[in-house]
Image (cartoon, rainbow, N blue to C red; front, side):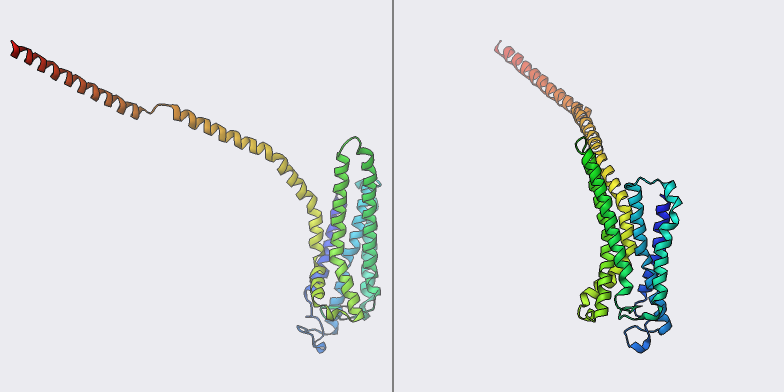
Length: 300
């Protein structure tokens, strides 16, 4: 885990360097080129191109991440064994990136959006090789997991879920490659062939996607944790709903019980009315008795 975090941290450092260089866009471009926003000279143009090329180390380190997944999942390497080979995860991608960055110094020139290696085709070869290697490696990991799950599928459905989970994570991992670097490669080859200026929409898309390598790596890294949290929330939802329903039911029972308890004020009013009615009946009875007595005396 620590080796993986070190690789991600190193990848992020080089990605930030390249993204900052991209962020200057046409500012380092020589003013003599009459490009909008250009305020630089040959030295600033070369510096920007150098750091943009340095940023491709992030692409190469993604291959090291893929190799790490392959060794841990397919070959069962533990962290202790990984640490003994840790330099091989860092030295080759950084060395290749630095080599192409220094070799490209004579070729850094205005590329309309920024300064980059203006040589035809060969500067992008390492990126192409990296994409192919990462795709093949992650495909091998998926196939290995698929073969393992075929054996366990007849006994449990867990193997199928594991295979699908690994496949999805591999798609996200390689998808980050494709979203970031394929538009970049296409744009570079279009610059070399002189066709890029006729596709403004694609230029805008490629220029926007290239600095987002770090963002997509972040999405790939946090996605498993996010999905795990979502599963836990969904799994806990029925118990929470049941608990909430039981609370509501208890409240309803209490309200119902309270509604069945007699209201003392109402009872008192009813008693007063009954006493009043009884008094009226007694008074009427007395008057009737008096009238009868008087009539009997008068007859005598």
